[in-house]
Length: 311
Length: 251
Image (tube, rainbow over all chains, first blue to last red):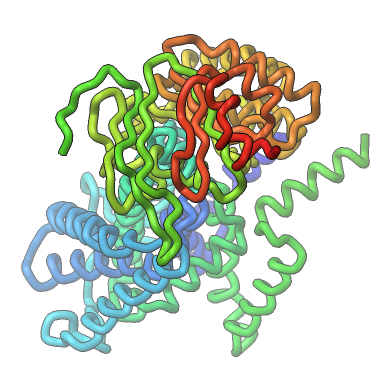
């Protein structure tokens, strides 16, 4: 059973470049990018119990920094990526200090407010960001001389980064630190009495999530070769949150499944149904009603039940 | 400030805490010797748990001092107090319900170790953590349930895990907040023998209403009422005291 699952996943990741057309390969690349983004948000929401409505800030800021540095200031992609990620991490450190003055709803509202400030800046500071026009005409990097301009080569690149991201975040949550994080989520008071510093554990996680949000932002801007203020918007944060919750927050597969679902609906269904947002809402409603803990936990408990019956 | 003197395990000096107009700790001063077994009694609302919460750092007093083994911890956050050897249990069970018994005890161990910051290595690879957690579970007689989640075990067993998480830290000062609450006679006897077996390196302060059991464990008793210390001293003297009968035991 386990091998069947593993080979199914490996197959669905490795086969698209050989079987599918450009449209689907590009869709798969976008799913990978959205999956990294959703996984980063899931560190906060699922494992840290910190529901954020501002994770798009980190995707957006990294993307904007890379876009500006390469298109306007003549930086190479390597240096631009390094500065973009460092800048995003520093911002996450600063925002974390502000947002973690509160927990629960207060935390949610502060992350929302901070992301609104950034969105406003991207929109209004048009002399820097080009405002509503966005920044176009960007290029993709060529790591170690490999050109990423074709859909297939970009897919391989995204797959490698996504695999590293998935593994790193998996190790993170299953480490001693990850155990502390889940403990602080469930019983912050007891954890403090046991010698853990809840604030610092949350802050480090916040910064780490910001880092991976930034990585997804780099891939995002490489893929689209364009960046617009909407990528920083609350809608963008909320869409990822929806994906995390629909897929199963606090699991590792959940955010990936959720991100895939949102993107498939957005790209595929929108070709047939004009109001794809309504369809997304209906699907989300269905998931919440039938599998309140999300697709991945829901399906796995369904499989367990089936096995018990068949025995 | 009062000069840091003392070979005391715990010194509470002129502690005062008020919630709005309601004073719940009034000028409380207590000293506890290393190795002592102290019982804190008093009617409901006497401020016993509030006192514990100030000692452990969950609540900040309005004034007064708290010293732990000579160190002024009045303004320390709870986690720093834990690193100075303070550990506590809760009246209302405060465990990690979705995790196994072993994981619960492991968190107790991890809290005092530097490896709690380790991010690049799965926790399952720490063999010493696992074996020490299992040893502690064995001490409280729950090793056979090590792999079960807390949500699946009985209330009486949860009480023992509550104790095991604190004991795993090998504390120098242990605060037990009603460790016998809600237990059957048989479970009481089990927990009583566990508390009796705590080594003398650990000073124990216990809040408990079950006098029959608790008095056997205690050497000294402090009686609180309306946030004040009414009587304080050796067990037999406090029990014999007129005021104890009046306030707590009933005439």
